[in-house]
Structures are given as structure tokens and as C-alpha cells.
Image (cartoon, rainbow, N blue to C red; front, side, top):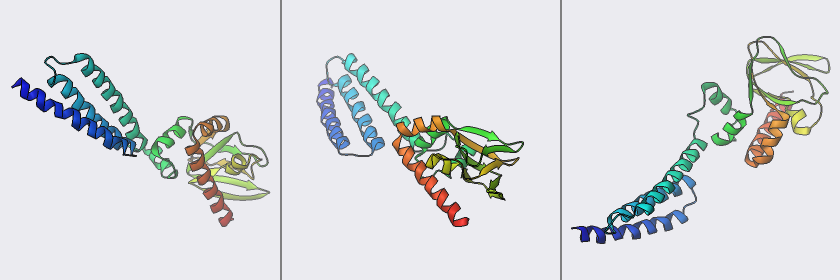
Length: 217
């Protein structure tokens, strides 16, 4: 009986090795690691059944490697899903649809949220902004060269100053009842240097936002 198990268990090595070959041909990281996880389980079964005595050292190290693989799979899964985001964060993410959920989470880590109770100045005309703002809910009061008007959410505020590194084109104040998300310039610059994917996605959003405002002006 045990000899039959040993012979049959040897087939696991061939099956597991074949799965590794398939994994090397797969580009999708989550699929690749899923295949590797199955192959690792087959190796563990082989180390247990094929020898006369289980190879516990190989089994334990295979378990460790499998656990590390599972951990990375969880991270990859979180990179692609939004279920851990709060309702407000998901509402904001709907406006940042050029980003992967994982990229958006990194952006959230440096974000500052503010529920405005009294009028809050966000930018001053001709002065460089120290943060990029996003009006998620509510309205903003605009004063541009003596002209007064209101801006409705959702929209970026201070994007021209941030994007072009020059003074703001208008003085903007968030009205009571508004929700504003802000990213300090220094923190955002550091993040964008480390994460080129986020930089490209954010610049695309800012370009679109500025184009819409130009068309509406």
C-alpha cells in the first residue's frame, strides 16, 4: 500500500513542475501566484507521501513559501478592489477613475479631509498654493479679477497653481457644508516621485478638469 502511495506521489512532482512552467507563461500576477500556490501544495504532498518518512524540513519551508505567496496574493487582490474603502472614500474614488484602487489608497494616506463649517479659504489669487484641493461635496465661492461666481462640486481647486507651479488664478473659499479633500504639496510631490503611475493618472485628471473649466468659462 505504501509503495503504491510513493509511486503515485511521484506523479505530483511532474504535475507541480508542469504547473510552474505554466505559471512562467502567465503575465497576470494574481493568476500566476494562484498556480504557484497549487504547485506548492503538490510538493508538500509529495514530501509527505513519497519518502519512507515525511521530509518535515522541506514541508515546513514549503508552507512558509506558500504563506508568503498567499500574503502577496492578498495585497494584489486589495490593489484591485475597493471593498475596504469607506462610503466617502468610494465617492471620491469615482472621480479618480484613472487610478487603480491600490494607487488611490496610497493617495488617501496623505490626504486631509475637512467638513467645512464656516467659510474656508483654499487659494489666494496670484499666490502659490501649498496644497492641491478637491471639492467633493458642496460649493466654493470664486473671486477672479473682481468677478464673483460659485463653483459646484465635484472639482479640483488650485490645480493650475499646482500643475503649472505658479500663482493661483483666483481666490477660492469653500462654503459651509462642503467637504474638501486636500493633499499638501510637499507630501504629494514626494509620492508622485515614487509612484509614476499615480503621477500619470493624476496629471490626466488635472488636464481633464482644466479643459472642462476652460470650456465652461
